[in-house]
Amino acid sequence: MSNSEKQIVVGLSGGVDSATCAYLLKAQGYHVVGIYMQNWQPEGNQDCPVEADLKDAQQCARKIGIEFDVINFSKDYWDRVFEKFLAAYQLGQTPNPDVLCNQEIKFQAFQDYVLSTYQSPMATGHYAQIQTLDNQYRLLKGTDPNKDQSYFLCRLNQKQLRYSNFPIGRYNKSQIRTIAKENNIPVYAKKDSTGICFIGERKFNEFLSQYLLDRPGPIIELDSGKILGEHQGLIYYTIGQRKGIGIGASHDQDSPWYVANKDLKEQALYVVQGSSHAALNHLSLQASSLHWVRETLSFPVKCQAKIRYRHPPQDATIYQADNGKIRVDFDQPQWAITPGQYVVFYQNDELIASAIIESPL
Image 1 (cartoon, helix red, strand yellow):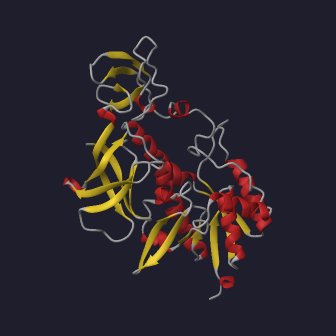
Image 2 (spheres, helix red, strand yellow):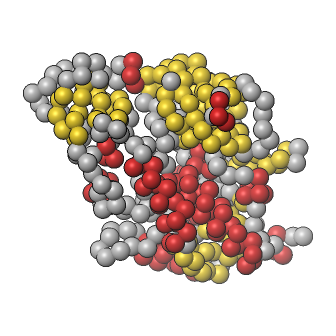
Image 3 (tube, rainbow, N blue to C red):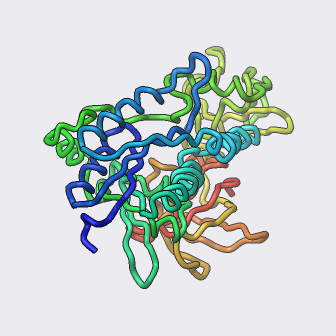
């Protein structure tokens, strides 16, 4: 079957990556349908870019010359992403809603809709690649190391990869902007979105306070047990945080203070001085909810691991632990291992698995 006889649905976000993705597929001869997913319903005067992004997506579809539609997944997003996001913060964790959104919405609810409505695969503007080898779909890093987004796709399964396409994964960002500019795609110079979509331009703490109870408590120096001040709520702090802790100038400022631990039972925030403090650097972590992207490998597994998106991959070994959990041992100490974040495992350029960090060890 030629590409001209094939149909593919592109998730148009209103940004340059997804728009160029749609352009490239049409240039290859595909019949392309662009769909804008509305995953958040702004309330009142919330500063959320939904309307502007929708307008940009419409203009791009018109310029490229493809069909366009809008699908509202706001309820799915609230139930399957946002409530889990809030629950994790309430437990003192620091979740990554982008990973959960890809798992539950873009490659589950949206992909199911595409398959049932159009009987065709879907494509997105992610900087990642898919390779088929030995009847397995393998998730690979994007060619551009500064834009690789495979980390955010770490919970995808074989079915989701089978019906997915990442056309821009072999390009770097500058090439994508050049292609968009040369073909007069309206958003070729649009800035990349940053942060979490449903928060928009508002301050993060201000947003959280609308949904979660912010109970104040003591700020305690971990080494001495001395109370240094009062925090406004553990939900506002994350491991390794330096700015905005709120320790007064009367305390020793020769070395910056960092958040080292959060005690929910005592509602206490523990801090230490200096990024090299032992409480911030660990050789191991415990994680749960291990997810293999392809076939399960036998333990122990040698790999490279990332404990957050911008974290350089580190040599590590995965061991099976009790109760279905895993232990990850690093060759070198890792800084600010944060509960709630995903630890993602690679072998060379292939993403093989991921798990949710429970605690450093």
